[in-house]
Length: 481
Image 1: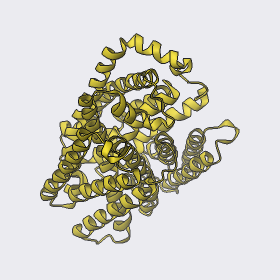
Image 2: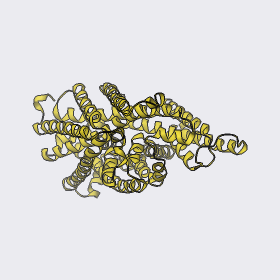
Image 3: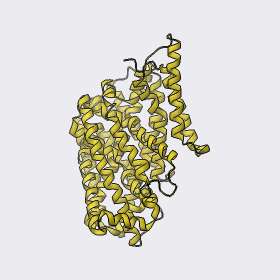
């Protein structure tokens, strides 16, 4: 496709969208007065705005382009191995969010420093979180650029820089103020649009039963819960734990929880978000099956699964519906990209710079936060020009990283009495090394990296408890309140 072939409606929609985004960023810049405003909305985020922000930052390029592409390639096993774990994680977070919010911190490293008594853990934890956020940014930029390149004809290598530049500028201007207000609109657009496409497929392809039958006719393994060897029961357990764990350990989730007014608001946010996301992902899975059936029947099959949804938009759907979907997908991508860009700035300034310079002024911390956002955004964009894998592959890697490093050490330490801080930190370090290293080796002996990391982390925590009971002179920090 060349630029002259681009659909003017899609190109116009994209340009208007960029202008609106920049306008909101400029407006939010005028409303941001303090570092707390920039980082955590002054800790005054209400339930409606918080729920919209949670849903919007949860739904990403992977949720729309990546998941639909994965269903196109692997069928319903994506629902079993990934979506189920994510939704369970959001529901499970409801039961621990009170303890997290009561600590009244800003970031995950703040919490870890509190429960371990080791302030020096902040920059170490922050480094892992920045690696996760960086991978997520790459994934988001790839998804956005694939979509916009497909619909406008502008070469991918140029479009990724245009999108990256706009997202960076928008986030640097307004911080969480711009993120929250934009996400209120974006969450509504995303959920409504997926419902519209779902309804369109019901009319175009028939009932739910008809879509499922045609999906199975394309490949009988499409409707198998574990796919065609995509998951073993052991591998499924590891995948569920990994994606369950990311909900508990993502820096942006912790920042959002601590931006709410109080524990009651945080719990209301998680309850409402769990319901909305459960409905959204059920609809999205059906849309993925419908996309597969529509493209195959129309002779529009693609080799790259990540292109399945963009091709559906440009080659199959009516232009009116396609334009609406473009807005929704761009909203999904922006709503998560700005959140992760924002978290990289907060993490760098709060958990690294502030540790080494505790007397830094609020103005200096805000400047460092903005500079870090620019730096991580530019490097992520550069990598996205030639991405290292599919969206789902990158998504799975960061799920393993987060869960292996933080799930058992942090929440075990919050709820178990008598865990020494050193045991918590040892479990974090061991989990990170084992999770990433074992995955890089290809899961030797058929043992998934997440399972091994979780077992080792749990063993170290329990060992710490045993030492504490035998040696009461060992400082006790975790779970002691």
